[in-house]
Length: 74
Image 1: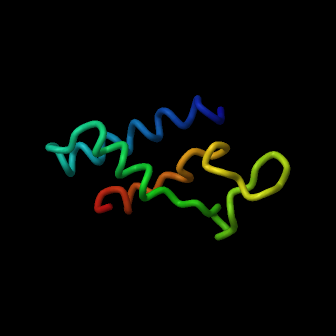
Image 2: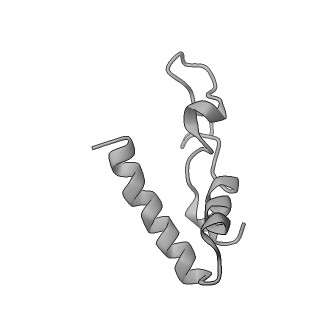
Image 3: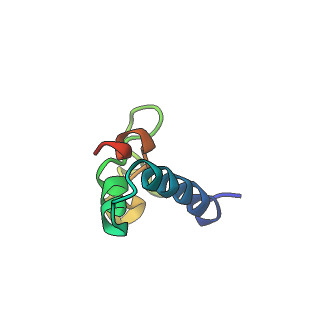
């Protein structure tokens, strides 16, 4: 499985983590924490690439790769 089929369970887990650490945060605060702390680089430290092998825009990758550690304390 890949794509949305795996993204939803991963993000749901991050949301549960954040809600556990910050029970007073609203859904918008959790969304903001996830999006503003996402990594814009891949695991090799290079920009995330689109299907044309060019650096991807936010429209192609959203906010980037979720970073739960940073999202806990944005």
